[in-house]
Length: 487
Image (cartoon, rainbow, N blue to C red; front, top):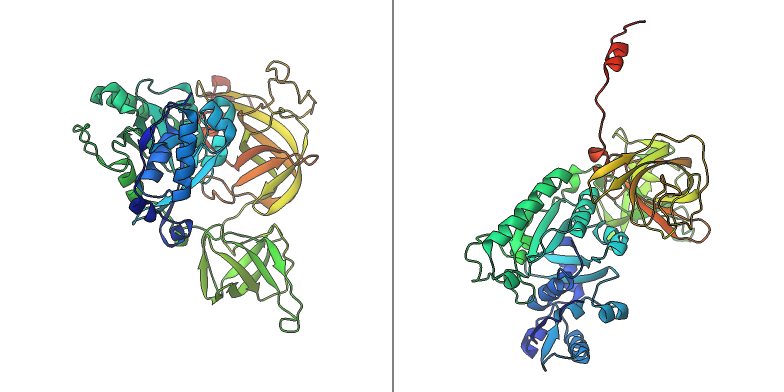
């Protein structure tokens, strides 16, 4: 059960300084996700950030105060900070976070969108959802318990999803008397693990979400720590959003043909720029058809533009009457782009029912949906041991009971929360961007066409799973064959 955490309610003056959601649109934005084992204090930490940055509205505070009192034991005027994010009734009753809860707060320097993800193993799929768009992950560790199995699991998923920055928040330092040795030991252990799985940037902070030490304000109880507070680090962490450094990608969402007296011949292609920059006069190629044309106009609700960049929503006009439909992607002519109908990628299995070889699924990538067959599951990652079980390719498709959850009846199947490498055969070619270089267009979903259930979330191309896959050394016989011996 989550420990009830209390803090003095803010004054009316501080509530008046609360930030509205509309303020966030005008500031530099950082997308965050929290992760870590259950009861490490994620919801309390988020509540502390919201509370201390005055991002809680008066009616929200009143509701949380009433909920705090209803749970018993809280004094008048105190707040259980975890209740600011644990919004579902089931979460409040169990004292855990089940769903992914999104919260917004901001400072003078930056606005934040924060996803509070579940800590329990059975909700790992929710963590994948919450971290899929994050630019920074806050991985919490209870200072009393250290790095746990679920901590490693969430760190691995963070690496798999390509989250570029990680903060190791060693929480509940007040319960270990702010012992520097405890903090250093946990930070060193996590750093070794992060290096093994390829997390590029990790910063550790000792803190107490309950008391507020080193969350927003610097603590005088950690004189041995000279780094930034959590919020200071979040405000300063560099986020590379140079649209000019990315290759242009524009998934078409809808074709606009008003056919009105005012615009009888207007044809525009509306969507959101996934990456890069587009200018009037640019030559573009329509994928997968390969047809080319020139951008003659960029229209928006506020008027025409000469240039637009990610993540703006625009309508593009082209010089030629080429065949463009929903799901097509406009890319720069001459820029590298792979199109194909055979897709190999890494997936996190999200469904209660296991994968079935030969299953007929729908693949959704960008704005495109195509029919597909699950041809292979050729590897599976054991997050707990950081090993990859590799299987030979399977040409003969067979069927297993998709409702059977036992692990021995279909060892090559993926079950709930499993991570594996799959090969799909598509009914028609699509743009195959590597997730490592095109995070927005390199991700995909697998959907059951019968009932619309999302079966898996995946990433095109090599990922952490490939990095961990052992490559056997060539044998002497292999060397002889390569050298032409006996031929």
